[in-house]
Structure formats: C-alpha cells, structure tokens
Length: 253
Image (cartoon, rainbow, N blue to C red):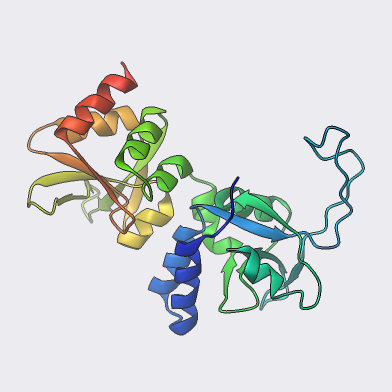
C-alpha cells in the first residue's frame, strides 16, 4: 500500500460539512468504499519479527476512537497522514492503512456505531446503521477503485469476474424495470453499479439486484444497447461494444 491520500472522500466530507443534507451524506457513504483510509494507532505496542516482514505475536493495537451523538462508540478514520497528525499536536502520529471498505467492515465487526472521517474537521460521522445496506449486500470494490484509473484498469477488474448491480424500478402493478440510460452520444446503454450505495446515489427510490458480470456484458451487447456505464454518479466508466466484446472473450463461458 502506497501513501494514503483519499481525495474523493475528503472532498465529499468537506461538501457535507459545508451543507449537511441527504445528498451530500450519500456522497460520503458511497466514497467510503473507494481507496484507502488510515487508522490512528498512536500508542500501540507493536513489534516486528526478526526479518521485519510481519507483526510479531504479542503486539497490542490501540485505535483511537470517540463517541457518536447517541453515545455509541465511534472509530476515527483519516483520509491522509496530515489529518491524523492534527489529533496529536506536539507528537508524531502513528497510523495504519486499510482499504476503505475493509475498514467499514472492521468497524461493524468490532461493534462500533459510527466512523468519523477526519475528526479534526471538516468531518462527517457515518452511522454504521446507515451503511448496513451496503455491507450486507454484494459489492465490487475492485471495479469501484478501477473507475478512478485507466480504461484498461476497469477492463482488468471486470475480467476478474464477480458481480455488479442493476438498479430496479418497482412499479405498483408489481412489475419491475431495469434502469437504463443513454450515452453522451445519445445511444442506449445499460447501467451497472458496484454497490447498493452507488444505486442510492443515482436514485434513492430504486431497488437493486445482484447480477453476474458476464450476464451484464451480454445484456449490454444485446440490441438496441450500444454500451455499458458503470457507476453513473461518478467516477464513471463507459464501455463501448468493442470493449465489451473483448471483455466477454476474457470472461469465457
């Protein structure tokens, strides 16, 4: 893991701090599953093995925490080293990097009620109750992270297989409709999402269904569709028919 600097999440937190509303909060939630975050482990008792490649048995970790507005435990998480250092004026802060989605899973497993991002401010407290719908459903963090990189990164992440989600509109007559859209060129395209949070960012009223990537590619190649857009709320990736054909061959049968 390289230097942690989760710019998209820090920007979303700043936007929420400036204007706290449902849409800005959802932006924070969905960006909690992209990139990496830091835990403040200052004061932990950590020793390494003789070869320096792993943490030795008997090490004790202490991650800094606080309280949420309802008194529940709140884990502190940071988008970069400088944000953690602001919690420790006059002493060096020690941090440990984790994939952002994995940190949320850790917080839930350890019984935290909240995760506070950059608690020195601007900050946002994310309720674990609010992201439970993401944590208990399938998500594809690899594809989510790849959308912020090169097109080839997206293809590689998709070629690994797994699932994405469709956004589903449930009608009063109990029929369902898979949400689609048009490309910037006006061509019909399928939409797919890496998590339930990405679906909610597009439309809070939509339901969602978990679908194999191979089937999604087949659907996007079926006329009249001319491509596939992943995570339309951004950062998004658009795959045309040529790219989808290459991806389908890599996925096999």
